[in-house]
Image (tube, rainbow, N blue to C red; front, top):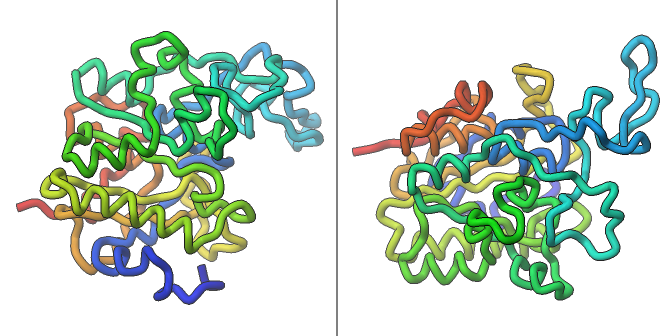
Length: 300
Protein backbone atom coordinates (compact mmCIF):
# COMPACT_ATOMS: atom_id res chain seq x y z
CA UNK A 1 0.00 0.00 0.00
CA UNK A 2 3.05 2.26 -0.04
CA UNK A 3 2.12 3.10 -3.62
CA UNK A 4 -0.99 4.93 -2.38
CA UNK A 5 -1.59 7.96 -0.21
CA UNK A 6 -2.99 5.91 2.66
CA UNK A 7 -5.01 8.71 4.26
CA UNK A 8 -7.05 9.07 1.07
CA UNK A 9 -8.17 5.44 1.05
CA UNK A 10 -11.83 4.87 2.05
CA UNK A 11 -10.88 2.32 4.73
CA UNK A 12 -8.37 4.61 6.44
CA UNK A 13 -10.84 6.28 8.87
CA UNK A 14 -12.15 2.86 9.91
CA UNK A 15 -8.66 1.45 10.45
CA UNK A 16 -7.74 4.50 12.51
CA UNK A 17 -10.91 4.40 14.63
CA UNK A 18 -10.82 0.70 15.50
CA UNK A 19 -8.12 -2.02 15.65
CA UNK A 20 -5.66 -2.60 12.85
CA UNK A 21 -3.92 -6.00 13.06
CA UNK A 22 -0.42 -5.69 11.61
CA UNK A 23 0.71 -9.27 12.28
CA UNK A 24 -2.11 -11.17 10.56
CA UNK A 25 -1.23 -13.89 8.02
CA UNK A 26 -3.08 -15.83 5.35
CA UNK A 27 -3.37 -19.32 6.76
CA UNK A 28 -1.95 -21.23 3.81
CA UNK A 29 0.57 -20.78 1.03
CA UNK A 30 -1.63 -20.45 -2.02
CA UNK A 31 -4.23 -18.43 -3.84
CA UNK A 32 -7.86 -17.52 -3.46
CA UNK A 33 -9.43 -20.98 -3.73
CA UNK A 34 -7.10 -22.53 -1.16
CA UNK A 35 -7.42 -19.76 1.43
CA UNK A 36 -11.20 -19.55 1.07
CA UNK A 37 -11.64 -23.29 1.62
CA UNK A 38 -9.23 -23.22 4.55
CA UNK A 39 -11.17 -20.33 6.11
CA UNK A 40 -14.26 -22.50 6.53
CA UNK A 41 -12.66 -25.91 7.16
CA UNK A 42 -9.03 -25.54 8.36
CA UNK A 43 -8.43 -28.47 6.01
CA UNK A 44 -6.89 -29.18 2.62
CA UNK A 45 -9.08 -30.74 -0.11
CA UNK A 46 -8.09 -34.16 -1.38
CA UNK A 47 -8.37 -35.72 -4.84
CA UNK A 48 -6.59 -39.10 -4.73
CA UNK A 49 -7.57 -40.05 -8.29
CA UNK A 50 -6.96 -36.71 -9.98
CA UNK A 51 -6.05 -36.73 -13.70
CA UNK A 52 -2.32 -37.23 -14.17
CA UNK A 53 -2.00 -33.99 -16.11
CA UNK A 54 -3.06 -32.05 -12.98
CA UNK A 55 -0.53 -33.60 -10.60
CA UNK A 56 2.77 -31.87 -9.80
CA UNK A 57 5.95 -33.83 -10.45
CA UNK A 58 9.00 -33.99 -8.18
CA UNK A 59 12.50 -35.29 -8.82
CA UNK A 60 14.23 -37.86 -6.61
CA UNK A 61 15.42 -35.08 -4.29
CA UNK A 62 11.92 -33.72 -3.73
CA UNK A 63 12.34 -30.67 -5.94
CA UNK A 64 9.42 -29.72 -8.16
CA UNK A 65 10.07 -30.20 -11.85
CA UNK A 66 6.45 -29.66 -12.99
CA UNK A 67 3.86 -27.54 -11.23
CA UNK A 68 0.34 -28.83 -10.84
CA UNK A 69 -3.00 -28.29 -9.17
CA UNK A 70 -2.61 -31.43 -7.05
CA UNK A 71 0.39 -32.51 -4.98
CA UNK A 72 1.88 -35.98 -5.63
CA UNK A 73 0.20 -37.19 -2.43
CA UNK A 74 -3.24 -35.99 -3.51
CA UNK A 75 -3.76 -32.58 -1.88
CA UNK A 76 -5.47 -29.95 -4.05
CA UNK A 77 -3.54 -26.74 -3.42
CA UNK A 78 -3.68 -24.66 -6.60
CA UNK A 79 -6.50 -22.91 -8.47
CA UNK A 80 -9.47 -25.13 -9.26
CA UNK A 81 -13.25 -24.89 -9.53
CA UNK A 82 -15.82 -27.17 -7.94
CA UNK A 83 -17.75 -29.80 -9.83
CA UNK A 84 -20.87 -28.47 -8.12
CA UNK A 85 -22.92 -25.85 -9.93
CA UNK A 86 -22.57 -23.04 -10.59
CA UNK A 87 -19.18 -23.30 -12.27
CA UNK A 88 -17.77 -21.26 -15.19
CA UNK A 89 -19.44 -21.89 -18.57
CA UNK A 90 -17.63 -24.32 -20.89
CA UNK A 91 -15.64 -25.84 -18.02
CA UNK A 92 -13.97 -29.20 -18.60
CA UNK A 93 -15.84 -31.12 -15.90
CA UNK A 94 -13.11 -33.78 -15.73
CA UNK A 95 -10.85 -31.11 -14.24
CA UNK A 96 -13.34 -29.84 -11.65
CA UNK A 97 -12.87 -30.88 -8.03
CA UNK A 98 -15.27 -33.54 -6.73
CA UNK A 99 -17.25 -32.73 -3.58
CA UNK A 100 -15.32 -32.73 -0.32
CA UNK A 101 -16.71 -34.31 2.85
CA UNK A 102 -14.61 -33.01 5.74
CA UNK A 103 -16.55 -30.87 8.24
CA UNK A 104 -16.88 -27.10 7.84
CA UNK A 105 -17.78 -24.34 10.26
CA UNK A 106 -21.14 -24.17 8.49
CA UNK A 107 -21.85 -27.79 9.43
CA UNK A 108 -20.94 -27.13 13.07
CA UNK A 109 -23.09 -24.00 13.27
CA UNK A 110 -26.08 -25.76 11.71
CA UNK A 111 -25.70 -28.69 14.14
CA UNK A 112 -26.07 -26.24 17.04
CA UNK A 113 -28.94 -24.34 15.44
CA UNK A 114 -26.90 -21.14 15.07
CA UNK A 115 -27.95 -18.95 12.14
CA UNK A 116 -25.37 -18.17 9.46
CA UNK A 117 -24.99 -17.35 5.78
CA UNK A 118 -22.35 -16.86 3.11
CA UNK A 119 -23.20 -13.85 0.94
CA UNK A 120 -21.54 -13.40 -2.47
CA UNK A 121 -21.85 -10.65 -5.05
CA UNK A 122 -23.33 -12.13 -8.22
CA UNK A 123 -24.62 -15.34 -6.60
CA UNK A 124 -28.20 -15.00 -7.86
CA UNK A 125 -26.99 -14.29 -11.39
CA UNK A 126 -24.55 -17.20 -11.32
CA UNK A 127 -27.25 -19.65 -10.18
CA UNK A 128 -29.55 -18.38 -12.94
CA UNK A 129 -26.80 -18.74 -15.55
CA UNK A 130 -26.61 -15.03 -16.27
CA UNK A 131 -23.40 -13.20 -17.08
CA UNK A 132 -22.02 -11.68 -13.89
CA UNK A 133 -18.94 -10.90 -11.81
CA UNK A 134 -19.36 -13.87 -9.48
CA UNK A 135 -16.00 -15.27 -8.33
CA UNK A 136 -16.53 -19.03 -8.63
CA UNK A 137 -13.33 -19.97 -6.79
CA UNK A 138 -14.20 -17.62 -3.91
CA UNK A 139 -17.33 -19.61 -2.95
CA UNK A 140 -15.84 -22.20 -0.58
CA UNK A 141 -19.01 -24.00 0.47
CA UNK A 142 -19.55 -24.95 -3.19
CA UNK A 143 -16.66 -27.38 -2.84
CA UNK A 144 -18.48 -29.48 -0.21
CA UNK A 145 -21.09 -32.23 -0.54
CA UNK A 146 -23.35 -30.71 2.11
CA UNK A 147 -23.89 -27.64 -0.10
CA UNK A 148 -24.60 -29.24 -3.46
CA UNK A 149 -27.78 -28.36 -5.35
CA UNK A 150 -30.83 -29.75 -3.60
CA UNK A 151 -29.25 -29.99 -0.13
CA UNK A 152 -30.49 -28.26 3.01
CA UNK A 153 -27.12 -26.55 3.31
CA UNK A 154 -27.71 -24.68 0.07
CA UNK A 155 -30.10 -22.27 1.81
CA UNK A 156 -27.12 -20.68 3.58
CA UNK A 157 -25.62 -19.47 0.28
CA UNK A 158 -27.04 -16.08 -0.62
CA UNK A 159 -26.47 -12.93 -2.67
CA UNK A 160 -24.58 -9.87 -1.38
CA UNK A 161 -27.75 -7.81 -1.88
CA UNK A 162 -29.46 -10.07 0.67
CA UNK A 163 -26.78 -9.12 3.20
CA UNK A 164 -27.30 -5.39 2.71
CA UNK A 165 -31.07 -5.81 3.08
CA UNK A 166 -30.71 -7.94 6.23
CA UNK A 167 -28.24 -5.48 7.76
CA UNK A 168 -30.53 -2.53 7.13
CA UNK A 169 -33.50 -4.39 8.59
CA UNK A 170 -31.63 -5.73 11.61
CA UNK A 171 -32.21 -9.29 10.42
CA UNK A 172 -28.63 -10.51 10.13
CA UNK A 173 -27.86 -14.11 11.12
CA UNK A 174 -25.46 -14.72 14.00
CA UNK A 175 -22.56 -15.15 11.55
CA UNK A 176 -22.28 -13.59 8.09
CA UNK A 177 -19.50 -14.10 5.58
CA UNK A 178 -19.57 -11.49 2.79
CA UNK A 179 -17.58 -11.73 -0.44
CA UNK A 180 -17.58 -8.98 -3.11
CA UNK A 181 -17.28 -10.13 -6.70
CA UNK A 182 -14.64 -9.68 -9.35
CA UNK A 183 -13.85 -6.06 -10.07
CA UNK A 184 -14.94 -5.02 -6.57
CA UNK A 185 -12.56 -7.01 -4.36
CA UNK A 186 -9.23 -5.12 -4.69
CA UNK A 187 -7.74 -8.01 -6.66
CA UNK A 188 -4.47 -6.79 -8.21
CA UNK A 189 -4.89 -6.17 -11.92
CA UNK A 190 -8.62 -6.86 -11.86
CA UNK A 191 -10.06 -4.25 -9.52
CA UNK A 192 -9.56 -0.64 -8.56
CA UNK A 193 -8.45 -0.15 -4.97
CA UNK A 194 -10.53 2.97 -4.33
CA UNK A 195 -13.89 1.77 -5.65
CA UNK A 196 -13.41 -1.66 -4.06
CA UNK A 197 -12.76 -0.06 -0.68
CA UNK A 198 -15.84 2.12 -1.16
CA UNK A 199 -17.89 -1.07 -1.44
CA UNK A 200 -16.20 -2.48 1.69
CA UNK A 201 -17.12 0.69 3.59
CA UNK A 202 -20.71 0.41 2.31
CA UNK A 203 -20.95 -3.16 3.60
CA UNK A 204 -19.43 -2.25 6.96
CA UNK A 205 -21.66 0.78 7.41
CA UNK A 206 -24.73 -1.27 6.54
CA UNK A 207 -24.01 -3.11 9.79
CA UNK A 208 -22.79 -0.21 11.91
CA UNK A 209 -25.70 2.01 10.89
CA UNK A 210 -28.27 -0.77 11.26
CA UNK A 211 -30.27 -2.22 14.16
CA UNK A 212 -27.70 -5.02 14.76
CA UNK A 213 -24.84 -2.58 15.40
CA UNK A 214 -24.94 -2.69 19.21
CA UNK A 215 -23.71 -6.29 19.41
CA UNK A 216 -21.90 -6.70 16.09
CA UNK A 217 -18.27 -7.48 15.39
CA UNK A 218 -16.95 -6.95 11.86
CA UNK A 219 -13.69 -8.50 10.69
CA UNK A 220 -12.36 -7.18 7.40
CA UNK A 221 -9.52 -9.12 5.83
CA UNK A 222 -8.32 -10.61 2.52
CA UNK A 223 -7.97 -14.08 1.09
CA UNK A 224 -4.30 -13.66 0.22
CA UNK A 225 -1.32 -11.38 -0.14
CA UNK A 226 -1.64 -9.01 -3.11
CA UNK A 227 1.50 -6.90 -2.94
CA UNK A 228 5.04 -7.19 -4.23
CA UNK A 229 7.12 -7.44 -1.07
CA UNK A 230 6.81 -7.77 2.68
CA UNK A 231 9.69 -7.53 5.12
CA UNK A 232 7.91 -9.73 7.69
CA UNK A 233 8.49 -13.46 7.11
CA UNK A 234 5.51 -15.66 7.95
CA UNK A 235 5.70 -17.91 11.02
CA UNK A 236 6.21 -21.63 10.55
CA UNK A 237 3.39 -23.81 11.87
CA UNK A 238 2.94 -26.75 9.50
CA UNK A 239 3.28 -27.88 5.91
CA UNK A 240 0.55 -25.55 4.67
CA UNK A 241 1.51 -22.24 6.21
CA UNK A 242 0.87 -19.64 7.28
CA UNK A 243 1.56 -17.72 4.12
CA UNK A 244 2.24 -14.02 3.67
CA UNK A 245 1.01 -11.22 5.90
CA UNK A 246 -2.35 -9.68 4.96
CA UNK A 247 -4.35 -6.66 6.20
CA UNK A 248 -7.04 -7.07 8.83
CA UNK A 249 -9.25 -4.60 10.69
CA UNK A 250 -11.42 -5.47 13.70
CA UNK A 251 -14.46 -3.18 13.80
CA UNK A 252 -17.43 -2.45 16.06
CA UNK A 253 -18.37 -1.76 19.69
CA UNK A 254 -16.22 -4.61 21.03
CA UNK A 255 -13.08 -3.64 19.09
CA UNK A 256 -10.43 -1.62 20.90
CA UNK A 257 -10.43 1.96 19.67
CA UNK A 258 -7.48 3.64 17.98
CA UNK A 259 -5.45 0.48 18.38
CA UNK A 260 -2.72 -1.32 16.43
CA UNK A 261 -2.55 -4.95 17.53
CA UNK A 262 0.80 -6.71 17.03
CA UNK A 263 -0.51 -10.12 18.13
CA UNK A 264 0.05 -12.97 15.68
CA UNK A 265 -3.23 -13.90 14.02
CA UNK A 266 -4.13 -15.83 10.88
CA UNK A 267 -7.15 -16.48 8.69
CA UNK A 268 -8.44 -19.27 10.92
CA UNK A 269 -8.36 -16.92 13.91
CA UNK A 270 -11.82 -16.13 12.52
CA UNK A 271 -12.78 -19.78 13.01
CA UNK A 272 -11.24 -19.73 16.47
CA UNK A 273 -13.28 -16.69 17.45
CA UNK A 274 -16.53 -18.26 16.22
CA UNK A 275 -15.72 -21.51 18.04
CA UNK A 276 -14.94 -19.73 21.31
CA UNK A 277 -17.97 -17.46 21.09
CA UNK A 278 -20.50 -20.22 20.42
CA UNK A 279 -18.88 -23.16 22.23
CA UNK A 280 -18.01 -25.14 19.10
CA UNK A 281 -15.27 -27.77 19.07
CA UNK A 282 -12.31 -26.88 16.80
CA UNK A 283 -12.27 -28.36 13.31
CA UNK A 284 -8.51 -29.01 13.33
CA UNK A 285 -5.27 -28.21 15.13
CA UNK A 286 -4.74 -24.94 13.30
CA UNK A 287 -7.98 -23.27 14.38
CA UNK A 288 -7.68 -24.88 17.82
CA UNK A 289 -4.37 -23.09 18.37
CA UNK A 290 -5.12 -19.82 16.55
CA UNK A 291 -5.59 -16.73 18.72
CA UNK A 292 -9.28 -15.62 18.59
CA UNK A 293 -8.45 -11.87 18.56
CA UNK A 294 -8.06 -11.75 22.35
CA UNK A 295 -5.93 -8.60 22.21
CA UNK A 296 -8.12 -6.79 19.70
CA UNK A 297 -11.33 -6.95 21.76
CA UNK A 298 -12.65 -5.42 24.93
CA UNK A 299 -15.80 -6.41 26.82
CA UNK A 300 -17.60 -4.57 29.60
